Amino acid sequence: MRKPEEKKTIRKTVLMTEALSADIDQEARKRGIKANTVMNERLQHRTTDNSPAKVTQFQDYANEAVKLIMKYSEKDAKILERKANKLWKF
Image 1 (cartoon, rainbow, N blue to C red):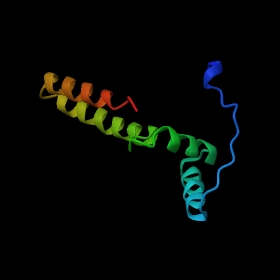
Image 2: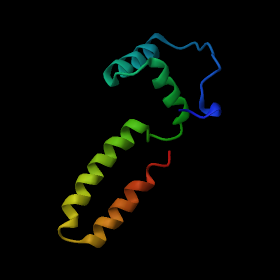
Image 3: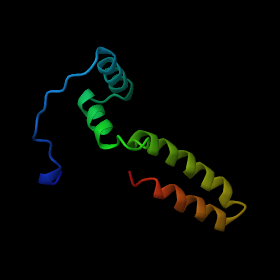
């Protein structure tokens, strides 16, 4: 359950171009989420390219790399894992 301060309670009307609206709708359909969620993510992560979806995808790649490297060097695998985990801070 969400904390009270995390609940979305404010509604704002936003004017945007048709192209931007189409882009948001397309991303929402592609990801199977609501357009509102896409807009909120874009606002929250406007200063970085690390959206939750991108970081999740990168984490999957990093996990696979850690598994492969672990066979040869546990130390290097731990370093890679630590660096990948730092990206979770948006």
